[in-house]
Image (cartoon, rainbow, N blue to C red; front, side, top):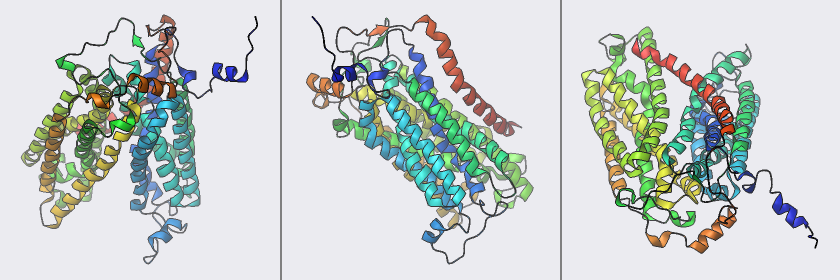
Length: 554
């Protein structure tokens, strides 16, 4: 008896190179190869945090040594399309705003597609968008058209940010059912560390390419696009997904009991999840936690300088009475303070997310809000007492919890809504980040300006702001308190889950698939090599930041 093989059979046997079916892991695969793949992408797109390193050089792209001013009567639209005068930093700053608007929008819109297409395809699209956006921006700088930068890095690059940010979340949670928080913390730590690697790299490249006629930015964009493309494609192609129901050898899911009642073993569809009260409450939890931290992150340098003034260098003078040399000295100290905060932001992503595996996600957020409230309420007094060390320590803890909030929330969502569509649900939740990106800085910056306008001393201008941020954390505490396990009516039925798994090309439901294994011994050298590829650049970024931070302790 012979069996004929049709074209359809061949298509089933050979799924597309980027398809989800192509990257389903085989027995013996080492799950510790997946976090470095995620880090490779997050370290690249995390440079979005460091784009301000380009603002000053770009503000004098034509003049090189000093900006070429636009005519006083030139309209905003004319400036957008003009190639005859330099761009003010306020116009360049729109790129940063567009980054996070389109990050949130793309993650929300295409999160469901990602669950079906798989992380490899999403990672490749992310690389094309992010690096392609850098190339378009390089063209915009070369032709001196800022709208090309807005479209290139802001819009297209922002879409790449969103897809790259959420691409590993669902995969990591499924590979590490026993360490959900730690797994997502490892990847999202990379996003916080991207600027630590990218900013000094960009500064070195601009220094290399700068000439008497060029500030060297467009050339730097080209080189960084090439470097990032190699890393991001390498990360995307290294992704593997486990078969449905996979678990580490010897691990059993904890039995349902009161202490872990928040953890479900069922699944909610993304189109249903956002309609639940739990989604709305966790949205507010993330928004309020991020609002309190993101405002501080943006004003850290002026805050330290204006609160302590000359005390930072042993001179008992307020900020407004310092001379140019003294201002330069305290600016260097403030830069070290900002660097220290970035280290705690990154470290907090891994520490708090890992800690949540033991404490529980809801309890971890209780710590964020309660401890954060106490610190925000205490900081004004520390400033007035002149205690720089405790002031700095308080902000370091606050920024660690800011980063920890980002890294812990994917595992919180997986606990509440299950793992089947957690990447898509996380994508929709990131609209809270976009909202916080407006709320936090507006509160901090405008309240500061108002305080100064009514004659409040610079050293006290932040007090009301800090108390308001403490109030936001009280609201966050209450929202977190109201989170309860998801009601049964929201979960998918067995038939709905099977249909969703078929759409997502998930394999593992049949008895022929091995669903439990430990890593093959021969994979350990490969895992070490993968970690070195991402660990060395990250370690270099940390070292550079520590050198800048050292001035704080002199």
